[in-house]
Length: 338
Image (cartoon, rainbow, N blue to C red; front, side):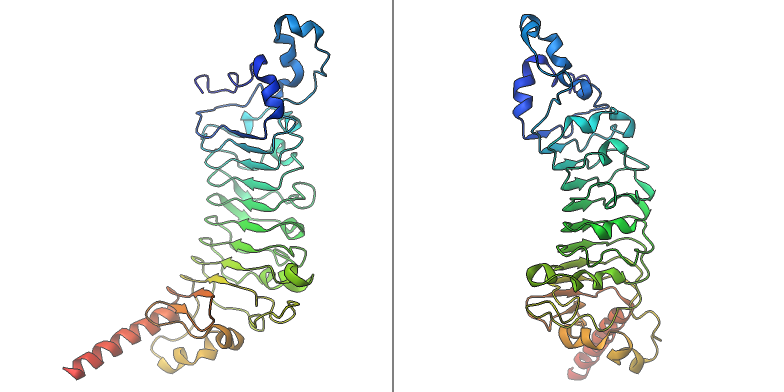
């Protein structure tokens, strides 16, 4: 927008259309501020002759029916760009997309106070340190999707573990060193995807083993995709990998269809010069994990035993050792054949 504001959009003659609008994209518009959106019914005062007969409540929101708002890729939009009554203008808003903006270092109160939200995307903003701990307790109680990739978050609160409707959690490319024990939790019975890749995690998030412990049927075996690649995890939990039955009452991670553990530190404690120690599968991977998924293919690092399930372990020390040994043995056999 030429003025770097929303003034062009908020013309009085647009008001009837804005009232019926369901989706609004201001993506990559060069915006610096959303000031003016708080004017609400005051637009009627500028409507000329008709304004004298307009009895509309001046406090009426401009966008009473809007369900999706995309203000992404406006890098000059910050917390200060939102007027104090911003949330009041969107009583029906379900999705807000703020990717590639400059919100931070905390999520603004104006966004937190939109209590109807199902989807929040704030990837590649300037969020830092601890994520607001009231999310899931006071704010955004009906979230289905939370995507905060590409920020500088170091901590998240246990409130996320209370989001009963949460389906997708994206926290990739942050600076998380650990995840609270109750995130996720049994309360997240609908959670189907968790992505924590490219953080600094040293331990497997224990909460992942709790997701399927409450509920039954489909809600009890919902967790399908887990991405933990690019961390520093050294050890996997045992007793959680057995395939789930129809009631989800076997292994708590038994419903997994995609599991990415590539480029962690699994097997780092093994002595690389002790071949027996590395190849002794029980010393590196849990027994129930191996029974279901098998050892990784030395060439690819993928476990192929379970049909229709993708498990990746490449880049871990023990997988790289197996790959090196496989290459050395292959070369040795080729030389012997010559």
